[in-house]
Amino acid sequence: MAENPGQSGTEHESPDRKRPISGLNQEKMPSVEDQEKKQDKSGEHSPEFKAGYVAILGRPNVGKSTLLNALLGQKLSIVTPKPQTTRHRILGILSEDNFQMVFFDTPGLLDPRYKLQEVMLKSAERAAQDADVVLFMIEAVPESHELDFQMLERLRVEGKPSILAINKVDLVPKTELLPLIDECARRYNFAEIVPISALKRDGVDLLKSLLVKHLPVGEPFYPPDMVTDFPERFFVAELIREKIFQRYGEEIPYSTTVVIEEFKERPGSKDYIRAAIYVEKPNQKAILIGKGGAALKRVGKEAREEIELFLGRPVYLELWVGVKEKWRQKDRLIREFGYRP
Ligand SMILES: Nc1nc2c(ncn2[C@@H]2O[C@H](COP(=O)(O)OP(=O)(O)OP(=O)(O)O)[C@@H](O)[C@H]2O)c(=O)[nH]1
Ligand SMILES: [Mg+2]
Image (cartoon, rainbow, N blue to C red):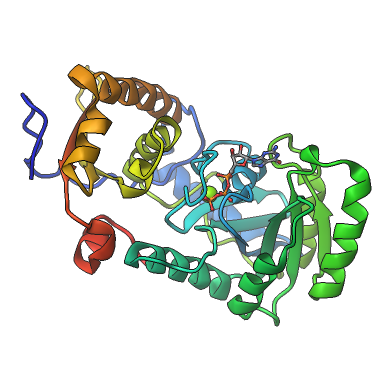
């Protein structure tokens, strides 16, 4: 595998940092004792306390990740204007006094054309199967929603309460909404239909209260201050991928994956993070790096700023680019890069 001039980047990783992430910009992660205390407290819930899993599902680009972030009140899932941004089932936890909702943000539903997309679809299907409540999303556009409904029907979730969020209502005149709501109500047995703008947070509180209404009664699954059970390094890789999706056109973003090779806390100094960006072809590597390394440098700067915001502490980020031919077609590499059905 090729590397950038002057950079090593092959040594292997420091122990995985699997601390639960408990909110953005916190100075300090809660200690294990703090977490245990909170868990003890969670034993004192009222008999009406509700807890359950909500899968956010829909075609690519409808705004699922934007909605997850709006519901959580912080950026957990990456968002870009390009379809197929999300590739994993991402867990986000929302805890309030009387409920805990565990969301799965999922990859957009589509007909897979290569192995990575098959894995992405399976991971969305699994989220649907594991969910207590299905939150299906479409866009409030005047075009036909036939494909959305085909995808929904394929998920086979008829037995579960399904809530339809019609997103991006900020883009259409109100008069177009009523006929769309009518059509959706005729087409599928939704428990609720809610027009929202995830971007502007319109209707998000109403949607939240309707989700709570359909959540089963039960004990919380996680301590109340926990936002996800994914490790920090996962989100670091995602933020780098987000910048690549935002910065490059054509097939570059889709051919790219990011691997965190080293993530080291250094007492008295910034955290050291080394990440590999893999593409499928040498010419993609050249584009990614740019003239004199300028393009990669820009990605590095933008990603570092976002990572620092996310972690709430300064980091030193080193990026290098490698080529793994046709990795999106190869089961072994897909698994090695952390994609799971
Ligand atoms: N105008 C408008 N744009 C929105 C709204 N919600 C999301 N978007 C935009 O739609 C684009 C896609 O948003 P995402 O949240 O990444 O969509 P997604 O469904 O997670 O997409 P995939 O991960 O690719 O399946 C981004 O450019 C968002 O800013 C909304 O309510 N109004
Ligand atoms: Mg997404």
